[in-house]
Length: 309
Length: 198
Image 1 (tube, rainbow over the protein chains, first blue to last red):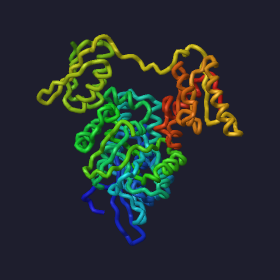
Image 2: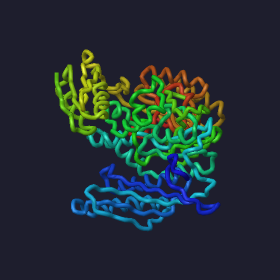
Image 3: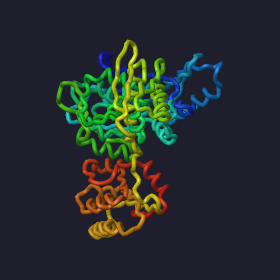
């Protein structure tokens, strides 16, 4: 893969039947519970492999830890969380590296396998494809509300569990359908990542705002201005590519730019396979999956956001 | 007029400071000084939800968000619960398109009759439609009119969003509010009694 267009991970072709995918991701804690933080960091790192149609095989830990200020048991819990997710992914931890740092950071470098013909990129949106999103949006807004101590405990729990969920089942569901392109939703938000797909494919997209899954309770938090700075950065970077219809509420516009941690897959699938794939996803327990928009022939590389479909 | 200086504060700090002042003093005019554009937008959104008209002045290196109260406090809590709050809460939980399992025509007719008769049930609080039950709110049958009538009389009707998606009926839904499993479980817990139609 060249680097001129964005993609989820690096790909190296070994022979006609095998390519490897490599990716690395780490960040500072986004939840208080160290075991959950470990799980979320691992789910987030593994996600790029799934988004490219691959299967994770090996992983290495990356740790920065303030050993003089924090108890080592915290680190143990984080690593235990990471290993738990690697087990679920059937990937092997083969090593790692740790340094002392003032601020705690954790993540992983992951290597996966993919058959070159099954490799999924962001660049292949085809007119009339439908777009499916597999996890609800709003993790950045909820994290901001947590800092403000304004997030309900129940909401925080649901968001935490969703972030820790691997995109493995969604990726497995995709395998038997005509999927043309895929990415995972992380720091650039839904519209940022979709912009990369649109640019990479030279097509345009129509989104149906009311179909987009959002965590329950996020509307109130977003309306009262608990929006992370990253959401505004994402918007300022991509606003030239996005046209909102006048009746799309501001809070929902903000949510669509909200940076996500360990977000869901955004899947472009042929029109006739969209409903069967959606049923397969829901049948596998991915109950928030929704069809949220459609690829247009229009070569102007824009995203038109309408209120409904 | 109240002025708060939030320079040097990162989000969500400025919103929290503004919130504290609005809640304790309820000033008719409030000026919030911030030094980054994310804080400017967030404070504007917050004051907007509190019933203020917003205007922003840009100075060198800072912004001043000015909120002016639009008359008396307009903000009311979301009234979603119905008027029967005080009495017993009866929840009808419907997970099937037909009433009973036998001949389909009979089952459909019985279900329609059941829904029509539900208005005779005192303290009916909420109806939840799940699995094939969502078809009652979205196909061409007569059940839609009956459910609409119940909704108008104050009964809350929740329709499972995942189920609508699965059966490709999101756009066909004509009555009720789309819901998720969390609401379903909470409703089951809050109800004084649950009538189960499977």
